[in-house]
Image (cartoon, rainbow, N blue to C red; front, side, top):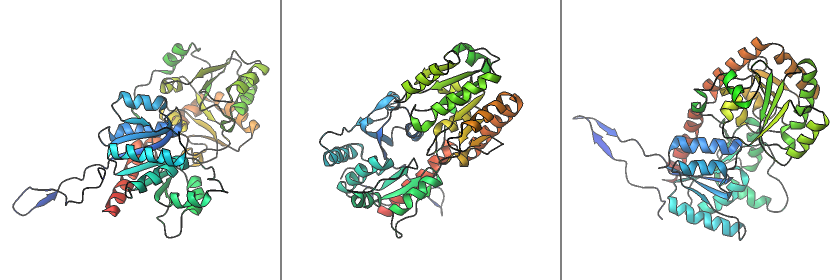
Length: 392
C-alpha cells in the first residue's frame, strides 16, 4: 500500500577511507486522530506538537469537527481533514482508512478512547500500521456492551498516559504480555510567552486598574472545572479586597449557571467573562494568580500556560496537578470541594504579592525543567520510531 514502511536498507555516506556514517532516519509520517480540534487542553497539545514536527510529516484527522485549532493549523499549511461520523462506526473507520492512505501515514497517534477505537480499526485495514494511544483524562473507559471489543482494539496500540492517575486507569485494559503503559507528561511551547506585555500594559488593554488584585481561570466552563466554587470564594475575597477582579476565560454549557450565580452574589462589576480567546498569554499577563479548582483533571494545559506566564497556581490536587505544582513553592494545592481552602488561598496570595511573585517565578523554572514541549515530543518520537522498527 502507499503508506507501507520502506524496507530497504538505510542509505550511507562515506566520510573517509574507513568510515561509513548511517544517514539520519527520516521522521515518521504521523497522523493524529482526534474527536475535534476545538479549543481545549488536549487540542492545544496536538496543535503545538503538529506545528513543532512540521506539516511535511504530520497531519490530522478530526472525527467530528475541525475546530478553531484545526483552522489555525490549516493556515500553517497542515493537512487537517474532517472524517465525519455519518453511517456509524464501520463507515467512519473506513473513511479514516482512506484518508490514512492519502497522507501515507507510518504511525497513527490517537487521542483518547473514541479516536482510538476508530484509529485501530483503520490501521488494521491498512495492514497493521502502528498505533499510539494517549489517555488524557482519568475517567474510566466504561463497562457493559462492547467492552470486549474496546479492550481488543486498545490492545492494538502502544498506550501512553499524561499522568500516573490516567496510567492506572489504562493498565487493567492491557494484558500482562502487552507493552507497558508509559507516562508522558504534556509539554508546552514557550514561544508565545517569551515577549509578554507588562502587567500594567496587559491590564490597560483589558480596561483593568493597574494596582488591583486580579485572579483568573482559563478553562471550559463546565461543572467539573469548579467555576461555581471559584466565584463563591472570590465573593468572600472581595470583603478584604473590594477592588479585586476575577477573569473567566472560556465558554461552555455551564456558563449561564455561573453568570446567574455571579448576579445572585452581586459581584457582576468584579467578575469579567471574556469568552473563548486566542490571546490567552496576554490575558494571563494581566493576572496575579491563576486558579483551577477542578473536581477531575488529566494534565491541564492551562496550568502549564499559567506557569509559563510566571503565575502562582491555586488548584485542586487531582490528575497530574500534584506532579505539576509544588505546594508552597510554585502554588497552593487544595482538596476538592473545599470552598474555605480556596478562599484562604486566594486571600493569602492577595495579601502577599512578594510570595505570589516568587511562586510564579519558581513555577516557570519548573516548567522549563520538566514540562517543555521538546521533552514531550522526544518521548513520543521514541514511541513512533520503536513502533516503526518493530513493524520492519
